[in-house]
Amino acid sequence: MAYNWLAALGMVRRLLREALWAPALIVLAALAYCYLRAIAIAGPRLGALRPAAAYLLAFALSCSTALGWEIGEFIIDQFAGTTLQQGNYDTMSDLILGIAGAAAYLAAQAIRGSRGAS
Image (tube, rainbow, N blue to C red; front, side):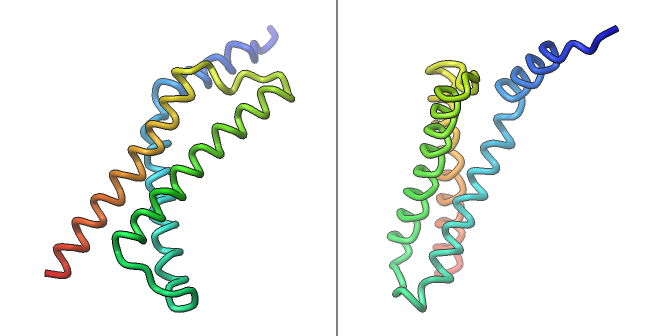
């Protein structure tokens, strides 16, 4: 009996689309953390930013990463003939989750930072 790899691929796609959105949200929150830490580490060398500017820059970089990922999926779909993007719903939900993950982490970090400063 031959292994039906197309069925397995369909299962993986469904899993990614329906169940693995939470880990994707966590990954993008982790990106926001990495960008915020990189800004803090670069501060002494490049000049420190005010907290609001650092959060805004980390948010913009996280959103740019999510957008770059979607552009990469589009390019791969066009040149390799794959179907990484399932349509507008898939693309927009990925972007929305990317923005939501970054915003949630940065908001929590800003609230925690303002409580520690008082």
